[in-house]
Length: 253
Picture 1 (spheres, rainbow, N blue to C red):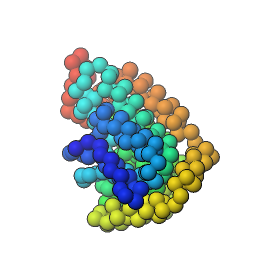
Picture 2: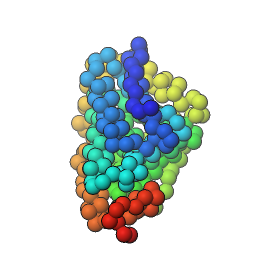
Picture 3: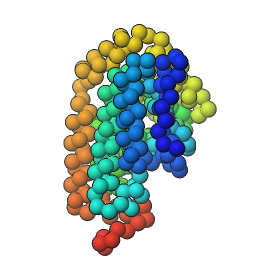
């Protein structure tokens, strides 16, 4: 359980998220994802990264129960910082990152995938940003990298989800395959990249980030500011309590 990182002989590094039962990452889990990607970025023997998950879903976002069972704002601040660190590490990784998405990918999961360079998904995969249901904002920056602007806004305001197969037409998901073929599909793309001269690929990654029309780091931090406002106003605590089935001392709502 946790975050594992394995470098294959062909230069493909496989980073796996495994947090049963739903892959809702605790604070430390987000920092561990960041550490794994930063390690891959520094390692000259790593030519490409596959970011995948074990279990029935890719990522369920932050661990809301951890947040609601913690006193004060330490868990909230930790989750905000951890998510930012993980998303940044994926985006700024000096080599391409392939997201291999199975099942649900919501909230923070969209942050990881939206910052990846290539996305392959299983037939049962779907994406969503349900933050408004829990009194938070975030990942619109990254959903906007997967779908057009008006669709992103609709998904954001309604907390609806969208199937991976529907993202193929938008060009954000490369291909959708049966669940038992997902790892092989990701490895096939990774092998094509790993076979290139890694010096060229690393230069290409830096060049593409340099011409990106959106500064994803600043954009996401801007979103997080509104999340903090909602928390200070007590709105987020009330909605997270309803979701997690908890009630903090002193919260009479």
